[in-house]
Length: 323
Image 1 (cartoon, helix red, strand yellow):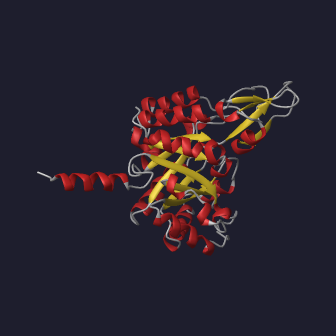
Image 2 (cartoon, one colour):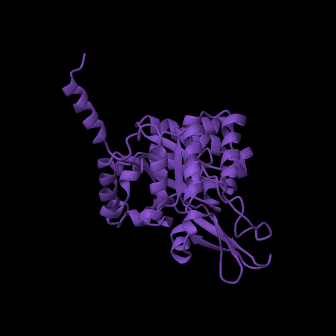
Image 3 (tube, helix red, strand yellow):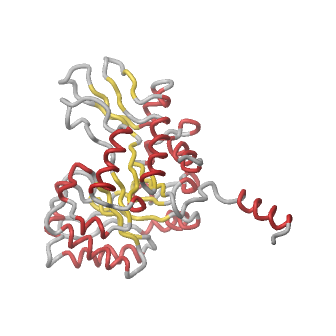
């Protein structure tokens, strides 16, 4: 039986654990610019509030060559690893990258896979995040991610993905099963590309339904799904033909007093800006604790500082006893 002294020592050790003591279970994945990571002052980067950083975007040119100089990434990666944070470059991204259709063909994708694995090993990275979206997904996507997964697993590295319900029918069960975990982009249900559909683009209900589809209808285990939230908003109106606008969350709360406590604000000229304030982010984090394995953020530089930080809200909710 432990003595009183041993019990007190144990309690003191528990109290001294890092702010994010459940890093091994609840993930907090933040997307951050790859180019910014090459020069950022690491003393200002919130490693202590994250478990993973996905650097966007690492892409080859149309011939398949990676031309970006990543030598400056060493400081960022070393600082992340010191805080037990994993760093994964993310490939592709939203929009069209037609050259991937050529690079993923059977006779060519092995070179792409080899190059990606070599980059991961050379720069001490922790895996690859695959953000090939709707227009970039074709009949070779499944084989590519399965083969990439095999190659990275052989090096004890991760294979993750960004996925969304918008192109759910293009994602085969075999492809989804290949990923160590998936970041579910539960945002952009409307936006500037759809001015005839004004309104919120990322509600709590959207998050619930998106998670429900992938966990219930596609039978993906909750531990392999991370719920994505957006640190930005879209403005619509006052007329249907008024061009929509977008703002980062930090700019919204800096411009409109009290905006952090709600999910929409009226802008000069009559437009309405829709986004996620602190309470919705808190509720989504609790939802992720119940039905997923973490929260993903697009993207970290959209956050406000100090008491209005959404990343702080996520950390606080993740540490709470609910649910």
